[in-house]
Length: 141
Length: 141
DNA sequence: AATAGAAATGAGAATCTTGATCATCGAGCC
DNA sequence: GGCTCGATGATCAAGATTCTCATTTCTATT
Ligand SMILES: [Mn+2]
Ligand SMILES: [Mn+2]
Ligand SMILES: [Zn+2]
Ligand SMILES: [Zn+2]
Image (cartoon, rainbow over all chains, first blue to last red):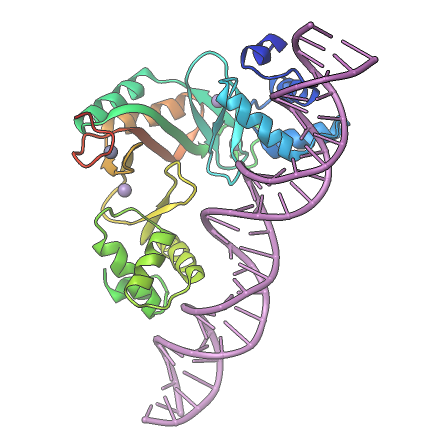
């Protein structure tokens, strides 16, 4: 992510914005709540307010730099917008988030919408289950 | 919906619970926010608190009598649990909610989860678009 | 029908997440 | 360097939902 992306979006290049982008880029999980970002900022010694984090993320979303999703928690999660659209699988136990894209599902969604007389503009799809990660607390030993 | 359903769930048969069930049963849209139910109670002269509405709906959800869904508004919506699972299409303009069930999508979801090593337990799918209802404010004339 | 015990209710406070206000600060431009 | 306007931080505010607790209401039992 470059400072030019900020300028392109009509946003000044400021320290809070750069740090937040940096955290989103270097995140392992890639899907972070505003508060998680805020805590990382604190941990790295940056004195940036939580209100600024929310404000910046909302601006990034409007600029198409990040997208916001709701994964059955109270807080929205944010991720850097890379290539294309994808949907999510979330582990009920460890909270791990994986991404997928399935052309068949995408096509059927359009077809279903057409049958109902809707012209589909967007959709939200999240699968919930138990993952097979060795670190997942619920993995059968 | 019978009082026996309440008893079966270990819930006392009380006036607030009966009235709320009644409102859910007679609703045209079938998908109501807690506040919409609360307003209907007020309109029908019942002095039932909003906290009770939320409490009762949460209990009904736990008992499997209603299900709660999040449709990209701030408030959750509740619907009476009838036969089986279904997903939703929501009109961005008029807020109309339609239901659908697509076996192909359901199957692909299971397959995608399997590929990722997840055993899928649940999912949330909502399509957003513009409907073709003659009352929809955005319908092309 | 009266009664006791448990559960449910109502009113309001509390919580959680997110956005708004406003005085101060700093990035971009001359 | 200095100007101007957008950005920030601190605080407050709003909306949705839950919690607390005193009071009421079911329900089972006498
Ligand atoms: Mn993602
Ligand atoms: Mn439904
Ligand atoms: Zn897991
Ligand atoms: Zn419509």
